[in-house]
Length: 122
Image (cartoon, rainbow, N blue to C red; front, side, top):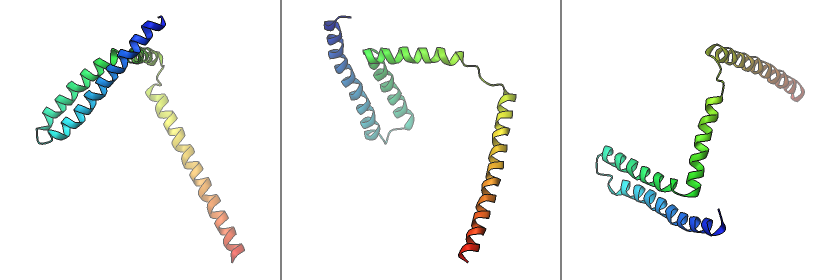
């Protein structure tokens, strides 16, 4: 993209982000103002404003970049090899055993040092 196109996009992007901020502020203020209304109606209104704000944000350059990043992250998560239930159980048991052993070692060391200090101090 050339500099003029980027400047034009960024100028309109600022207006779009201001619209997003205005929608979020309207949602917060409206939720407080209509606090006497049933919760279901307020939640539906908040969701509607959030969808509109998200749609407006996706029309910006940064919003499109975020959406592309989210899609790429989803693809990468699908590539992850998750451990089996057996591997998870074994790893958890090893961690619990090491924590127990280390807690006993530290308790013994603390008791020994406390006993030595009480002998020295008196």
